[in-house]
Image (tube, rainbow over all chains, first blue to last red; front, side, top):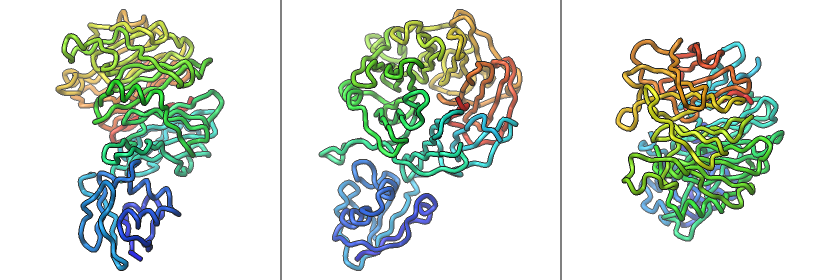
Length: 89
Length: 357
């Protein structure tokens, strides 16, 4: 399963320890992660399940390209970082 | 200590106590866009606007001593995810019924009105108003997208909703939101082409307030100036030639005397700061026929203070006003604005002030 690591700044507001989730795309991994952590979803994705405007996700060191449907590929041993973009101030 | 008012700022929520002391901020570092709290209500609410993580709503059951996260209004999913709307800001909140602190209205950017009957644990969007928004292509005022910043209803008739939208004018519903009509007749937007200046759907009321004891009397601080209604907001009369300016963002009305109202004037679009750097409050006691300029206790030198839409409030007695500015100054007046006492010069930019009511 992919390993998911959240920015410390998000941990200030909601419980989100490093954890693992299954899936072959970013959407699948996050979907599985948010099944049991529904409020966390709203901190990362907007009402249309797009990546929030000032958030970034990297998979194995590469920023994801598809911020709308989150179709970027995730491997079984991938590291996924969920971060803030500096554009958000 | 007894709470007098809540102060929503760019860097958290401050509590003002009756002894005029301010608390340390709750939600430190997080913008607080709106608060809703009452003297007799069991639940208080604070709307947050995390820059990165979206808008959130928190609720307190112990008069603001502690807060827990509730749910946020959510815009409906669309088939084209690239184009669908998403909550940007909770810009206004009202208790939906007297004596009930779990039934709520929330006005938002990008233009949706939401209702909750369970203290914010779940929300439903008002579909009838949303269809008007789509049909008339409401536009943003101060933000990229349209927003509902004012919600009111006559005290004896909570089914009769009155809202104001930047930019879509004033809308009313007499059936708890089942149907709506635009009631902006008389409003004028001088900045638009001549044939569109009276279009009700492009009007930009910055703030609308209703006299609680005389709910047919309402005031609007509009982008274009000051407007008054004496027929329940069905039609509006423009008040012109007010010194030093008719431009501003905020307005307060006396809770028992609908002819008495306060404004904080500024220079319009190009500057958005006090006229000649002189920060003053204006007051009318005769329905807008005449205005007084109030400055005792306010800055005597140059001031760049601006007071946002929700930065001025009046208590239930009609004697006491509180006012917070973009520069982090907080003032209170115990005599209807005749004189002001500065409570702090060093708060973060202030978005909203609210007495307990």
